[in-house]
Length: 318
Ligand code: UDP
Ligand code: MG
View 1 (cartoon, rainbow, N blue to C red):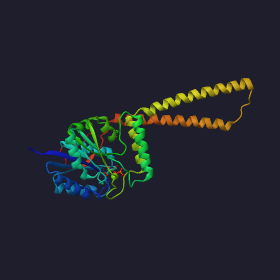
View 2 (cartoon, rainbow, N blue to C red):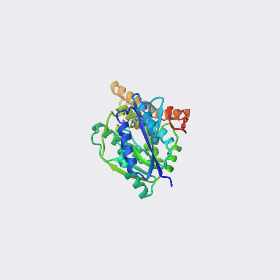
View 3 (cartoon, helix red, strand yellow):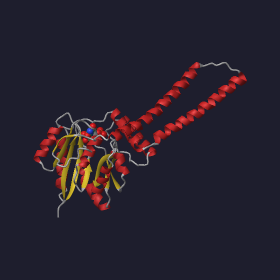
View 4 (cartoon, helix red, strand yellow):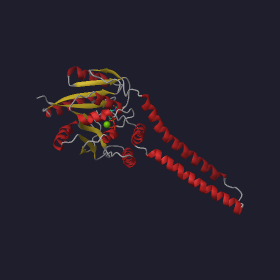
């Protein structure tokens, strides 16, 4: 009987310092889990350093290594999608390259998956030790907002480190939208999920690729892709402001008729005008977010472009 195959998908962007260590750690895990066969799908997301050279070299030495290299940086979501498209295993794991998702957890994840007879084991960090305070605070706020605003439930501290059954992977791939927010999609497709918790591990080497603004954009994407609440909020806000301004007009008219009060106080007027103008722009911005997503979706551009690979069946047009 052939062994159950596990594919490990790793998105990489400028990870030259960590690739070899990761490869070593994966080999240790593969040796430990000798009842399974392994395949590594390394996705180079347009790195500017030696990442591509290193994974090409690893692929030359080890036939378990499959790699794809993008023509430019398409972002982690596109890299994950490309990896999933090209993973052939009965089970597929996704993890970061920097060992913040410890490969050594895999045997436990697999055991849990089999023992609980579920489709998906996901991981969650219970601490954010070693992370800047502001970043932890913003991340917590984001997850809270996300839970309030959308129907899907994303656990605080959820990582993109999971082990999924083939059925679940196929469902995730069936969600082929251009604007991808994987954490949302994993939750949206359903299936039974078991959570495994672990303490935060700091990056093995190199630097985080997510600056404040990149994370901010990622959060806005998450909310806009999975919730209509902002657009509803903007219409409520419009209604409330209209009601308030009607009341204000009424008060002013009565004041002018009854007390024949001369008009005074242009500064307050300016404040009100700028306030309403600001709210209008904000609401238009919210609508703009949704329209721009629709625009990108309608164009149906490929999610990524592969420049170099050793995978045979590459779905270029995904
Ligand atoms: N990554 C990627 N494309 C990007 C940014 C990041 O493929 O544009 C990969 C990166 O190489 C790593 C994973 O996504 O494997 C997570 O990135 P990072 O460790 O920088 O994020 P953090 O752990 O700080 O959230
Ligand atoms: Mg990291």
